[in-house]
Each structure stands twice: as structure tokens, then as C-alpha cells.
Amino acid sequence: MKKPLLLLTLFLLLSPLAAVSLRAQGDRLLGTYLVEHGDVQSTVRFTRNADGRYQCQVTWVSNEPRPDGTYTLDVKNPDPSRRNVRADQVLLMENLVYDKVRDRWGQSQIYDPTSGKKYRVELSFKDSKTLVVKGMWGPFSRRIYWKKK
Image 1: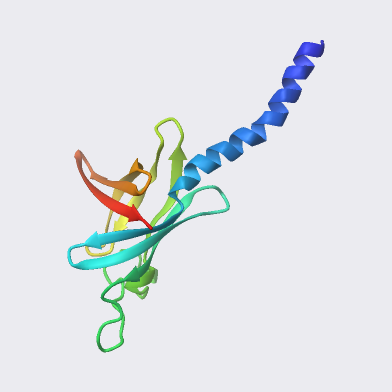
Image 2 (image 1 turned 180 degrees about the vertical axis):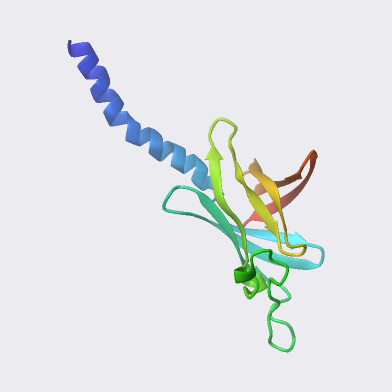
């Protein structure tokens, strides 16, 4: 009788540690990254929501504001309520889930503000400072690399 009780006690004590460890693995994604798109540079920031899912938002764009002081707006967004968002504040990904078995983040989409389209997305690290962003549409995919600051 003592052995099952001991096992149950160990399980209850170690379960929170496993959850913290999993969150720590997923939290490697958190931070700011430099993104290069042609001659325009930007930074994006990953944050974790209260539910443990991750999101990514643009925080700076090199050619914003324009010389006249105005900002480019996200006019191609399929969601009309987001068409007045400035280019340096666009939400690119939301509800990303960390898969500990595959050591990747996914189950979400990435929004391309230059086209207004969304693509399935999967994120993984090439090395500690290089994030591989894989956008997928049907059988086609494209990888881009973001550098962690």
C-alpha cells in the first residue's frame, strides 16, 4: 500500500516541474527578431499569451514613417477591422502551439501583409540565434530565416 501512495505523491510533486520544463522549452521562441524583406528591414516580437500559446507582432519597419510623417496601413488585410493598423504594428501570427516531440511551433498561420494572404506556418530553430519560418500553401513551402536579437 505504501508503494502506490509513494508513486502518486512523486507524480503530484513532479507534474508541475514537467509543465514548467515544457514551457521553458517553448519559451525559447520569446524575444525580438530581425527580419529582412528585400531592402526593408523590420523587427518582430514573440510573446506568450496567458493560455500558453504564442503570437508574433511587427514592432518596427525601417521605412516607417514615410518622409511626409504618415504610416503605411495594412490595407490588404482580409479582416476589415485590421485595415487601419500601422505597418509597424501588424500581428503576423497568433495561437502558435509548441510541439515538444518535434521541437517546433505550429498549428497556426502566418499573415503576409504585402499580399494580405495567410499561410500555414511552422517554426523551428536552425541554431540558437536563427529561427526558420516555414510558410506552406498546399504542397508548396518556402523557408525564411529570422535572426534573434
